[in-house]
Length: 427
Ligand SMILES: *Cc1c(COP(=O)(O)O)cnc(C)c1O
Image (tube, rainbow, N blue to C red; front, side, top):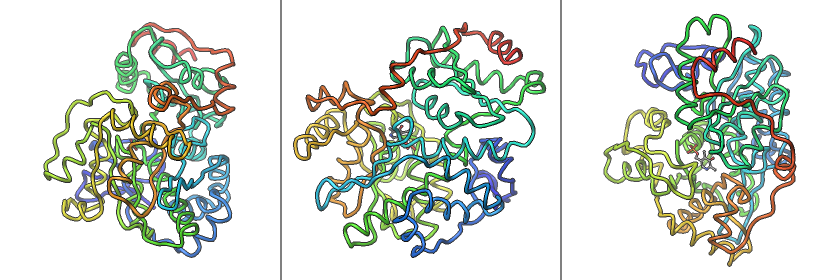
């Protein structure tokens, strides 16, 4: 399987390793597979009943057909060693819980696969993953690459500006994970990282790459859990052709679902569930795309005003807005509605929901969907919101509680390009 850029009408092809290490295509586009493999749904359902890893391995084999079977098996089994669960709140309300991984958010599904796969594809000596974070991405990347041989991860985060939980997740691993706490803001971190990628002299001495969320090694494996959710939902309800509701920000998650549907997964349609950052729902109504600055909400991982995967989404429908509208409905809501939903879910079901998943719940209720919504984060990561909204705080999962208790180790650094360059050269 080879890959082409969404911006290339000629569809020139790039190998998996090149596409993975480049992240973005040279023309600024996003990579997509040259063809969509069709899967055997009978087989998917049998394997899903066995285990997530077994099902994911079959799907990975159809997509990454030029990777040796035993290598792919090692990648999949080490990436997916954590649970996934379809939870039924009542006969009509089902949610696929994607937050049982090491950092308790769905990004683990992409980051873990990418980490293991990068270790496998990297044949040219030590590789440094350089990344700036305002909190969550850094911890998912750190846990995704933790222990991967031949790879070191350097994470820059703004000192004092990430939550104690986020900091603990990035700074208590040790090993090949190297956190730098920057005396500055997230923008400083990002500026420093970008300048390293532009520094040809540095790049001759140190092999650096990014673990950006648009990287196809993070994006493609996100299509797998749609197959799992479908199989579980069908087995449990006896129904077929579900609608799937996806809490969305950068739209990597939703476009991965659209890709799964093209692989033969019988999903009826999707709901793009957003907070007040509603560019995509607005586009579905007005057919006009108006990217803008994001506004801050309680579901902050979805605060995106110009989603990078919009381009992938349009490419999947061949640029046809009507085709997109046939496949996708839009929904958006306010912070007040999100907090009311958290309270309602708790009152009705005794179940605590994080603000992002609550957006999914609201959209599912709004359209009275026959299907399921995705839950993207564990409520314990947003304890202050659930306490305010529902008067209850979830217990920290054991791994989070352990991380919080461990000593935090991070190297302090000034917000200067030269200091980061020196650090990378001496490392
Ligand atoms: C990243 C994230 C989202 C948004 O996912 P996209 O793929 O960017 O649309 C939703 N919820 C949580 C908890 C996230 O971390």
